[in-house]
Image (cartoon, rainbow, N blue to C red):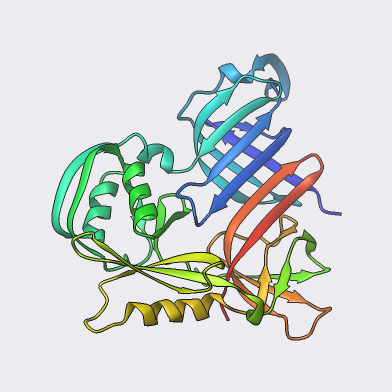
Length: 323
């Protein structure tokens, strides 16, 4: 039987007792968040001798660095690293945390760009933060781009939402900027009936998939040209294109994307134990031994990890099928 180990280091203080921890990460959101529920008070000891009982809410401060580690049989994995954002003095004590987005929200800026690139904008936004982009920034040109008295997180959110970019933290101070279908090369294997506790997965044949692709071409002058293909009542996917070559057909590119998303495969999510470790951007290799020819690789789109006295669980949402 596996023994779960847990520790939270908050503002340099280490805690090994908890009621519950919940961690949420998604390639569709910029930041990773964590919610900790701890006992309202804690016993302080020095060299094994009792000193006093302290009220935890009074020992923490907003901005304290937070590290959460847990795992089995003494082998702990770092599940979250970030900062304390909010303290709720309830019973149990509730602490809300977020990753490097916390520091991005504290950096206010104002600047106008002309004839610039996405790379130049990102370098300006991240200057002095210590955050590094860990992949090649897509080649996107802007005739103008205005940042007007907003914080760095808001600028990145604007790029993410309005220009269809996938932007998220892979680790502390390691930022990914790219396309939704890119993976980090790590393969995590799940076998239904073995290390899958429960799931809401549904197999869907490609001939039954109804999709509508909205292709958006972003011009250098920030103009948007759109083209829709597929079924009018289908589930919509919005795909952004930049700097298409002269003569490149937007409708043709939209049709290519439609074929990419219209596949025979699983949709939904699965729940497993804390092992295997699975992160957003990984590839899930899903095997169902009850059915032939249904093995497939899928992008990990979202991960919700929880731990309590009932055990640890990792809920993994599947994204695009990769093979």
